[in-house]
Amino acid sequence: MPHRDSNGTSASAGSARRTPSHPHTPLDLSLLRTFLAVHRSGSFTGAARLLGLSQPTVTTQIRSLEQQLGRELFERRPRGVVPTSVADELATQVAAPLDALATVVDRGPLAAEKRPDPVHLAGPAELMCTRVLPALAPLTDRGVRLRVTMGLTDDLLDGLRGGRFDLLISTMRLRGRTFSAVPLADEEFVLVAAPQWAERIGPQRVAAEGAAALRGVPLIAYADDLPIARRYWWHVFGERLTEQAAITVPDLRGVISAVAAGAGISVLPRYLCLAELVSGTLVPLLLPEDPPINTIYLAQRPGAPGDPHVVLVRDRLLRSAPSW
Image (cartoon, rainbow, N blue to C red; front, side, top):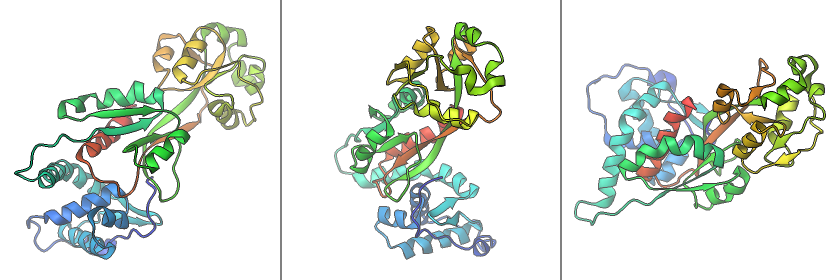
């Protein structure tokens, strides 16, 4: 869930659910603009900063919109507000028109055409290359320009804090008020080997003996501290991993190549090695009922300017990610 500001508030459910007295009254654009800012920032105070309003004004406007609609739009939580399904549907309907209107208003009818700035996006190389860039490719037809930086989340956080990146795809949950983050996708980890290694280890041995069946088998990883494998060992086998890596490659696609060539075993995100699993180039050594899952987040700075192209990229990722 997004990291929210603790001062976010919401109108009471009772007042929001009253049937509006004028159900066909056109909705005020200023109320919709405030609503969209709350929906995107995850808090009333964050929306207030974005819009240059006071927090009580934002609260009053959201309450007024809820009364007009006869529906509750946000649920209050300790770190901000969470949109209801009604709010999500409304945001889908009004986001594109409001963003287009904001672009015209900001530019002015007599101003020279200004080319939008590129959207600066950062995240892990493997995910960016195999899922993110294909998902964003259609946006180039809409004039969106992308500047992509790849790396580990820890190495990219300062760039997000400092405004060098508009959006960050993070492999870990970002805590505190410095960032606003929403879940993007879940990656499942799978223990894999080439068929020849699976045969050497022995069918069903891993299921029967656990980690003991893998002692002495070369382990391939993207870092010496074996973060993915250590998590798998503890979650699935209930043991600490004490083996050292035989090969480390700072790109999981390189790990796949080494494992497929018979160098040893590894733990990989299923989405990344799905083609190899389907073709039989790699085989799973174990299919636990409860495999380790890691949530990937889409993060930005609360109160960052609502650039329409950043919004396009963000919304496209949120729509595409569930299919990854």
